Image (cartoon, rainbow, N blue to C red; front, side, top):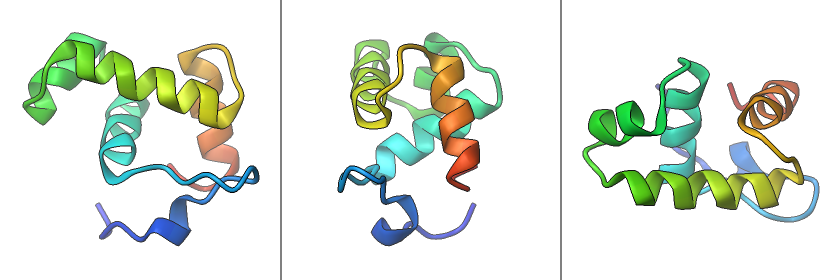
Length: 77
């Protein structure tokens, strides 16, 4: 995985993905569940849910699949 650069994860609405959101996004792209992502990143499952909720708002989408589609379109994954 490449080093985090805030400008690489800029959204059209002026928001940026955080380094942890990028890590969660990469795990989502592998098709992992919240529980699996939490285990892989060594953080609590509610924290994963919080990051996914924040990404839903940031991307302006309604579900995980739409997050991945938008992230792919923007070249994030």
